[in-house]
Each structure stands twice: as structure tokens, then as C-alpha cells.
Image 1 (tube, rainbow, N blue to C red):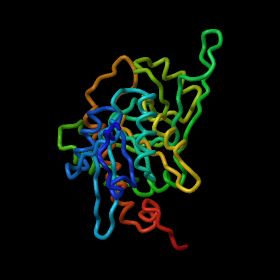
Image 2: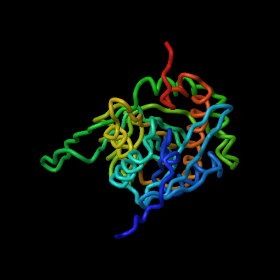
Image 3: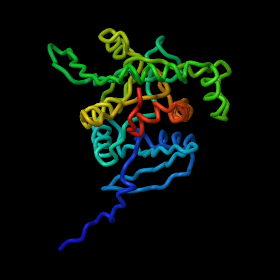
Length: 283
């Protein structure tokens, strides 16, 4: 009989309240910079995870973080589905970098996706793609909580200062809420962005992974235990010919710092903490 290649599992270790995924290794480094090194690494079925046990007074939240092995939407969806089925979190988050829609956001700004859609599927007719634009939305009550907790200039200034490196003096990591388009290509084409914007007026950002994790959260949800998707990314370029990597480190850090602040505030609030932990709230 062939032996089981997986180590025997301690059932108490095989759960998480929050899953955080990044698309690139540098984005995971930004996450580790903010969340610290007080984690332990667990490999499960070919995927390596960082496990954080957060303790705030008497409250405890388990966070599991990972990155995709490959770039792109398909890898995002497969990796996220695998992780969500194993760890069964309440919240599925993606941090990292994205391209912004020029005149809608600023370089170094933060984008919280109110909805994600895949921009490259649909019907090709007479040389023109008629997009299908299936989308997954973040629940309005989650967005409302984020807006209520993070609309202060103080938080935005803390994120900027916390980076600890030289930045443009006029940088303010403004938080933008709107639609994010996702597709398999690295885009350096302003006319393409303009066409996307003409079909979705709320579009403010583009990336290669967000729809994958949002769709996985939607499809892994059940009536008893829904999984909420949350995409938070920093704007590192405008997906045009001037695209560079200069803002990558800051944006990876800033998106993680925003998430860290939100989670700290959520854990300190009884109703938010109870939701994360699946504890019944008294009305």
C-alpha cells in the first residue's frame, strides 16, 4: 500500500478566519512587511501558506496568506479555490498592485473594488469584442464599513509615513471605490483602457487577478457560510506606454497597510469581530 505523502494534520490547525492572496512575490513581501514575521509556514497539497495568529487582548483571529505561483486570472482562480476549500475563511482578500484609469485615480492611490469583472470574454463580431462582463460585487455593507473606518486623512498620512522611504512630497494615498476590470494581458495601451471605460463608467482600475479570487469566493460560498471577497490594490501605473515598476514596492506596501488598519479596527468592534468569528450577534 502506498503511503500518504501528506503529513498527518492537526484538525485545530486547518482553519482560518481570513485568507489573503497576492499575485506576485513582491506583493507578498509587502504584506509580510506590514503584518510582520510572526507567522509559521505550512505546506498543504503543493501550496505554501503563511499562518498568522493575531491576538488583540482576549480576541484571536487566524489569517492565512499565500501568493500565486503564476501570473494571471486562471492561476488566481485555481489557487484561490484550492485555498478557500481547504481553510474555509469568512473573508477572501487580495492586496497588491494594479493599473489605474487616468483622471479617475492617482499614482500611489488605493483602489477598493466595489465589483470585479473579466474584460476579455464575450462575443467576437466583425473584429470587435462584445464583452460579457460577468461580475462579482463586494457587499455594500462591507464597503460602507470600510468607508466609515478609513475616510480620515490621519489614516492616509499614516500609510504614507509608514513606508519609511522617500516619496513625492505631494503624495496622499487617496482611497478610491469603483469597478476593477481583470484580464489575461499586461496592458500598455491607453486606447484599450478608454474602450473599457466607455463600456463601464465606474471603471477605475485594471489588473490580472482580482476577478479570479472574487469568483472563487462566490463559487465556494454556501448559504450557511458565505465568503466575502475584498480587493484592495495600489495604483502603480496607468496601463499606457509610460508603464514602469517605480511604484510597485510602495503600492504593495500601501494596500497591505490599509488592510492591516481595517482588520485592527474590525477586531476591536464586537459586531465586526463576531461576524469574522461566526459568533451570533444579539440584536
